[in-house]
Image (cartoon, rainbow, N blue to C red; front, side, top):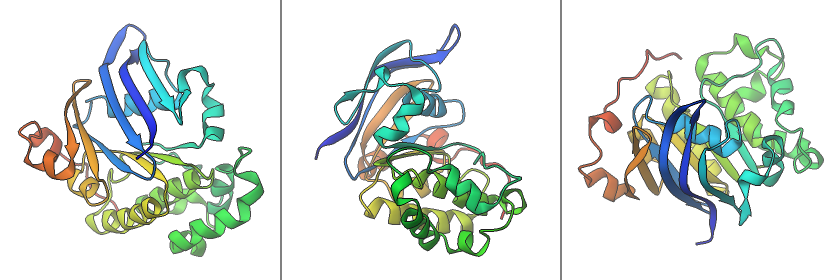
Length: 244
């Protein structure tokens, strides 16, 4: 397989506080990789470093052979990287369809906006039903569908999913991860940050366990399941109260 994303010795944090210490991971073309760990382990900080929301203190990040640290954050979307952030972050006072169109602002996505919109509606029929509804009036699960759909509107080659199951009911998690599986089968590479290891294992082929800013285990899903490094902090983290 061809490596699409490669991270070596990543060190990152906030001001004088180092959160990530020597993180190394890779994602191949067409692969789903899970980054697993408890709350506060450094998963979201890793995502922010990849998208340029924070500047790493050290290490290397390459995407499709290009030095990603030399690319401005807003230009990384045009390279084919899309983030679905933790907490959904939809725009509540505009419609579902307007939210989706905001995901297609980059050069790579504008020419095929209508076709991509149809694909998103096919993936999430509920969004098609609610296209004129204000996003803030949707349930938490529907807003998560919208956040994923908005990221897909940029026509990414790599999708970064940050805690997509957070706060969702088991039924909604099942629906959402069924759709994520469809996205993966379309050939889009996915780096999936999750506390819900069971949901992540349903779609990922490989994974990394992260604790206190360090990778503590890596391998196939079978290897990680059997690994002593995957303790209850990864597999049995406390989950917030579920919403529909």
